[in-house]
Length: 540
Image (tube, rainbow, N blue to C red; front, side, top):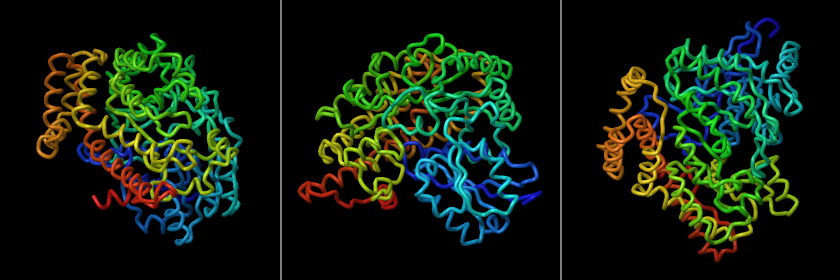
């Protein structure tokens, strides 16, 4: 390894059926998976140039035994939802006699769960990579490399190896501007992993990444994977004018999405900058409509403003909102289902990711539950095979409300908001209020032509195979083309999401209701063993 090394990077599988898998929709867009693995290709830019790197994403392709034969070492790792497959990858590699290096957020939060790997890398890798390479050159095949958290200077992070990606496999590529979030949400592990002082790249770094993507032929949707893009408002406001200039110079090749906190709606200047940069979607963690619950879980930032009014202001800036909601907080009362449904309806949010509360390793929530002796001893071990899918793997602790009541409210919310008529009524209100940027006739015609084949495939599939959607989609499309033609793409996006959200939520509700039945049968005395989401998917 002194001069050369064959490095096989293996990105483990996620749970195949989750809110963000786009299951069933990727095929219509001619892809195999939604997003490219940014962490892996960022790491791939750090070893010496003499090291040969090959990437296998098990979400999009099979691992060939010849890949393992070729490799001198295997690098893997990822998130909690990837842990089961990550363990399989480690076993496969070690059975082939290859040393396995594991890193990423899951092993950083729960190193004891990944001890079977040969080398563990904890924390952000930029400041560890030189020490790791030196150890490899000395022939070391075991060890632990740990970086004190929040100390990496991201202005020194290299341009990711976008060239390693198989472009046809993905709906969109990803980039990252910042790490960290200034807020204190009790259940969130982002502040534990990356800190509460967001660190940002320079505008020059970001533009270099965009140049590289453009050179490689990427166009269309591009996602900023920041956990809160506006966590450092001063920095993002300094960056956005450069992004706008780059977009204009290249005739807006990218439509942008990201994640941000709800206080985005308070800053008109920031909203206008994001609109001019061509952001079209933002994911917002709303979590609860109950002020007491938001205060209790330390998400006070959502209590200082009207949630529906804030969401509507984001629509007026041309971005649709997808939102996260959680059921299972200690302070919830019996009317939680109605309050969540009302909040979702009043905010006109079609895409609502509703999950059960999950105690993640290393979070304030987990530490509190441990002190209260309410944390399940095996809280990181999912008993139903839904690891990392918080829609069903949550409540890994003793809840204050009866588990049956929480599951009943959870099922009621999903059943109501994803009934086709209700979903598309919200989509209609949102789409017609979406004040998209006017890019000019030439760019709009170009984008329409580039996506014409996708449009035809989507509408053909809906018309032939999804009768519960057909009338709603055609009516919404016709009305949007007349009343708000610049938002037509949002109609396609809402339709695509429902293609997999409709069946997925019905399956989740069935599994939740099966557990409720088991609880009733057991007299509420014990937590029953129920079919997992994976088993339910296989049966379906």
